[in-house]
Length: 165
Image (cartoon, rainbow, N blue to C red; front, side, top):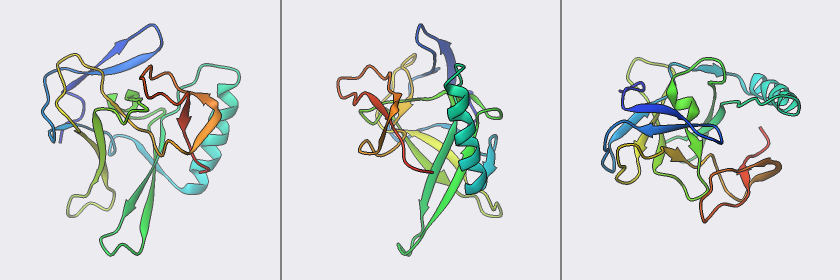
């Protein structure tokens, strides 16, 4: 699994963006994020989200708190994994949202003998060298009106996906 060597961070007029350091073909692993981030309980994720929201009102904070649901093979249950890469993490924490779904797909990967999964990103389509890497942060129907989206895509809905944590 790669931990950032296939990507690079570029500073743009708007913010940071992660770009492909080399051409990647559909299905190829781009980068793994979890394992170099902090796993937190749901209670702690809620506390941090509230704190990040308060900070965002007075400073330019870019939280990287991701809630991932892992659906079990039985189809009868799913596990919630809260990953906070705001302060600890690799370059994957800077991957931006795209309302059009982006060019990456997020996949939880489990290794035998490891209790915690790894969040890995795979190319959802062919990606050119230097192209910005993006993925959808969640269900587009769930949007907070106070979190504007800056993806600049034709399909942009104007606000970031979000749901009550």
